[in-house]
Image (cartoon, rainbow, N blue to C red; front, side, top):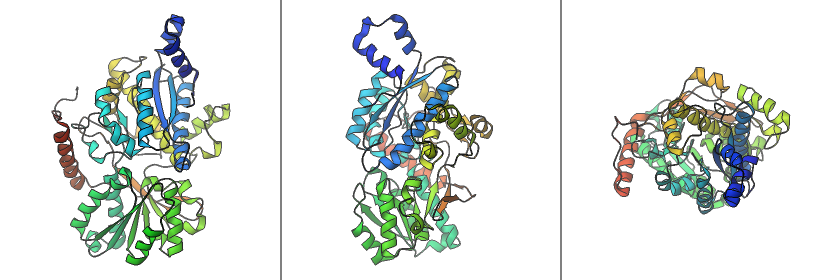
Length: 442
């Protein structure tokens, strides 16, 4: 495990040497906000996990280079999970005692494993665009924050888009839609929403699992070739995505009929397929490119000073930018908490949780932070731990992604009842008491 800052080195020394350290060093360490960084830079998911991790770390460096969070600098430490749930839990246990005030598990499986631990340890989980879909319900899942969207909102938006292409939701009746999915909690998560939509709209849903990591998909695409669905939804991650596109080419399935989740719509997913992936579509949760001010600020204040975490030409890519967004939301949760609990102070996990429940980033605020054109405004509450359910469709033209201008918003009339039922089931199983909607202080 690699230490990424002198502050973290000091923290380890403090835990080992204790009283041998000068009081001033211990005092200085206590003035820094510690962010654990669970990553996977090795294994079959590394091509996707690495830019995500680099974006997060570079944003921390940007904040530190420009004065910290109201003067509070950030310390951090990476821990390699390899996308494995057991290693993710080990990393969590190893880092939580170092002052962790929030965790981005970076995997749905790890999120599931930590959901019961977070309330005990009082450490909020940021699961932007992934994790447990039902955790949108903050009255049950007090410590989970699936910011900007879940797999239920993603699946709903994809069905909305397909319905629009077909000329209306009524035109979905009798259509065949196949879900080719990573056989893991991540890949299974959209199934309840798709099943609900299939009942509502009358389309035939077929489920085609792919064993992790997804290198072998011959049997899955044999099923696709035999059933010839009208559309294929790809719920893949890492090497599974490029493999799926190559198999689609081999079996002659039209790429323009394929739609990936937002974790299947980045540069690593298509670069090895190139022109053969032309026409492939995916959800775009965020903008990308080097034009946004925040990306320019990172290039100027971090990379141009030789402090960049990864290659400079990766800055602004889809997953790198998503990492920047995730870290920005964590920083802004701390900043929001400071408004209530004291500017210039290190925030605890409970205080950061309050900040996450009271995010209010309107367009003016996003513009000031340098995120114009990168994401839509987000506003959370006790009840709503998601804050935004918007996404767009992007299409690969053979050399680059082109994002359509139209934003889709998930249909809350479908999703909220599902969230409520799932939340009540979880609360019953765990013997939890749902928070009073009027109580946002606990």
